[in-house]
Figure 1 (tube, rainbow, N blue to C red):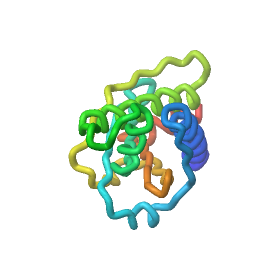
Figure 2: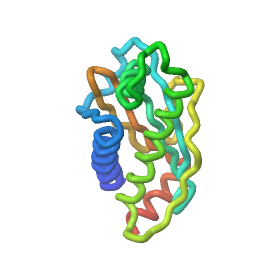
Figure 3: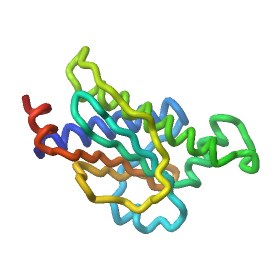
Figure 4: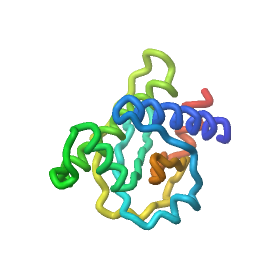
Length: 162
C-alpha cells in the first residue's frame, strides 16, 4: 500500500503542476496540513468520481482568492465582473483535467478509464472517510490540496499491485 501511495503522490504532484502551469501559468510549492490550516480565508472544493477501472474519488480544495486571481488572469476580467459560476466552472475544469491526466499517468498504456462529472461541494469541511492520500500545496501564498478517497482499499491494492 505504501508503494501505491507514493506512486499516487508523485503522479498527483506532477499532474497538478502541469495542469496549473498549462491552464493558468501558475506554479505550486509543497506545503503541509498545518500551513493550510493556518489559512483563514474561504476555500472552495470540488470532487469527482473515477468509476472505472477502480472506484475512487478525487477532491480539489483551493483558496477562493486564488481562484479569483486565476479567473482574472485567464479571462482578462476585472474582479467585479467575476461571478460565482465562473469560479465554480474553473475549479471543476481544473479537477477534470487533473483527474484525466492523473489516471492516464497511473494506468497502463491504452487502459481506459471513466470519470464522473465534477461537482462543487457546498460543505467544505474535510472528510477523513476512506482517505487514501491527501497532498498540500501553495500557489501565490494560497493553499490548495488534492485528496484521493477510496471506498474499498483492497480493490486499489489488488488492481495496482497486479
